[in-house]
Image (cartoon, rainbow, N blue to C red; front, side, top):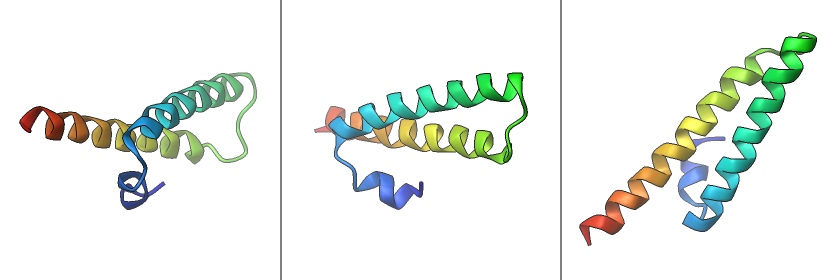
Length: 67
């Protein structure tokens, strides 16, 4: 998911999306430890998506605190 797409998502939805991505990431790690994933780069992409979501959420918090 690109940062421009993430910025268009409402703040309330971002937290739900973050929870879903973290759950998906943890499930991928578990599955990968049992049997290797077909595409292990999915783990890296999920981790980066989580970081992007957290970044946008933090930016929104800082904007609301400045006002």
